[in-house]
Image (cartoon, rainbow, N blue to C red; front, side, top):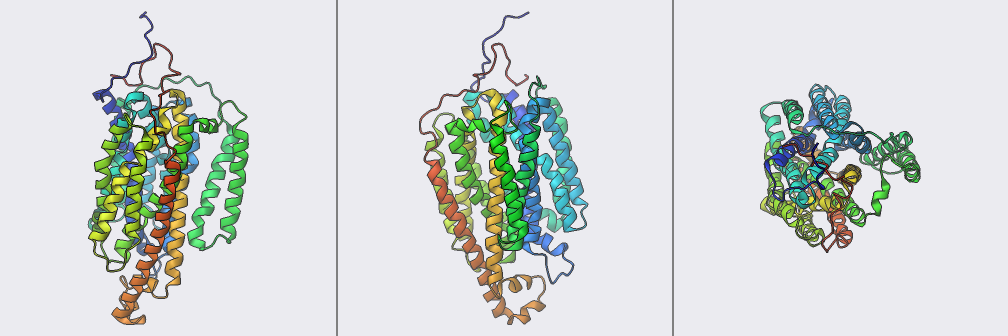
Length: 518
């Protein structure tokens, strides 16, 4: 027998072993995030191909459920991820998540109606919901405290590739193949990811001692799903007074409230809300909520503007959105390296200021705005995103112990998904109502597919006036997004401005090896 060694020592540099694990996590995250941005650019296509009559496309709020259903499923399964990772091991669970996501993708490609597509997106979301929190858990344990910023920046690669490649890939596939391929593309990637994970991830060493908080599951998962379902129904109903909206939200809130009261009783609750006693986690979570609501809600609208207002193809719309991802690609590695040395409170606010500047630029869009006046704000927003998102997540997790990381990453991902759903709902309902209030906006947009409609609204002059009204609706929506991002500066100012001591190794027993297998 060998003598027990001291607590594990992690190398300071990013070595080949940790990169091998990072490759698995990034591959899975790319599938999940790429799929979201690919579907975003396809929404106008879904409006046409699933409509009974080509002259009357489906409402935007209806096809937006292809995004919302995925998000709902993500939010429902995420609470179970922390417990399941402890119980079955992150490697086994990660491989199962990839299989579920891949199977859901194949079924989405076979959908023959918008209802079927929405249903299969739920299955996709059940797998996709576990990929990011599990990936964060695996990466954090692999990195050790000194390399977390740089490793989280690597996990941020999908955040970069999603905005860059998603719209471009989605546009190219739709124009040169069919819409089915935006889902079929995940099948070979998923197969590779499963095989790669089997060989690259360390063997699970689980000691299941925690029982499942069954009452917590029965309260939290349906409560979260009902609450988000109510929020997501607002764009379709156009008001909060519809029974489907307020009944779902009230029941959901009641279940979530009951869960919060319950969660402090068991020793091992489904979601460990006691972690919010950690100031870093608490402040980072509030900042993340406001940031994700505004950023991801607004992000959904950009490809739609280019296609519906400017008449661009899906591929061209994707290329026009790409500068946002390029901007993030430039700043995220820098921010990842800096956050290992500089407190996040001295980094993230600068990123938020850039996002605010870009978002205010988008509030000026018109139906004839020169493209450089749109592309430059998107690029600036990308610069800000790269300096904001992953540093905030790193700050939240860095001062947790190794055992708390799975639970902490689960909490962060739930907050992010709720925020994204709230943001998408807010932006969608504002845009939908603004378009409805404009007499010529919707007919002008429809005239791009059916030229006979143009004659009914006054010919070219009527179409031009309608597109101007539609562009004004998009601009009004971006004013709301800009206001929400500006609010994010308030909690961001409370992020740590002094170097925080890491507690990642506090609960690691002497002699325990790092999670990486060389």
